[in-house]
Image (cartoon, rainbow, N blue to C red; front, side, top):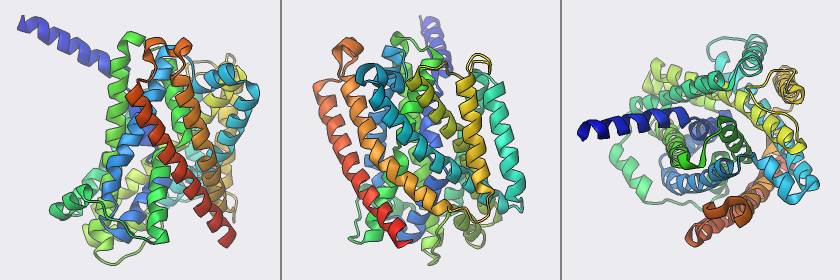
Length: 418
């Protein structure tokens, strides 16, 4: 009997390992260059004061990503496909165009983060960015889905460098625990702006499109959905823990020493005299990994979205001749985003701010579409949201819409000021 139970558990574990990927990858890639910068600045400016925010942010992230995963498994279609079929081509074109604009700016930011993090090690951007573009292109265009997913899962492991750097910072664990369970709030624009920025960098529109497309490409069966749900939860928890440790590491070192930083690269360099050379290397390596990882995923998410919306063949498993629009668009996005970083005097800050505004405008629409789709009985059958789930989901969407409006206002204010 025990032997039979052991075999069942072993089979379940092996099957879970074959299913995992989309949830873990999607959640972790959101800890990109912009995200790491936001968390680093939060820790250096306010110490542990924002640690409590990770608990509600984790709940919001799990709720949204779980619904997207369920949509993908039950319908076998991507989010763009469903929006086009249920709400028409015009609506889909609007969503695709907005996502393209915001992702172009964010992709450029990822390559900027990659260039800046490698410059810490003395490597010029005129060498690192073209090399990164070439490696990313070969991986996706010449690889297959299994290979790409394994590389991405390997990249997720490197995020643990931030957890190590957090321990090396030697925080006051009692103080950390107190700020985690006891919310602290400062009524000033900078604090509120950082809080909104942290939520904005945790839940982005591209995540929903990419995760659903990845689940569809894996051909997961409905009866195996419980494994997908655990993949989503595990990914969300892992990404939130990594972000938590970034804030904690900067709070334990930079904030206590009165060092104010403005970028993640500043944080890596400032850690050297406070936590040692190895802590700096760990932080910088994590930033290189995060930037390269996101620079691969974001163009892929955009490509999936547009090709699904237009009804074109899409998928990493396809040859260039089988899906020319998919592969061609992915190539163009990488060349444009990477090339932008090599232009002297390119207005990267303004590009990032504009993309942030578009991101804030797009997110509420995407979330509302998800909730409308997940509640269609003819589409989802018994897998529609329950009443309590709907209350929680609509409340979460209302909170995110409010934060998106605030994020737009802050970004527009920065653009006008700049």
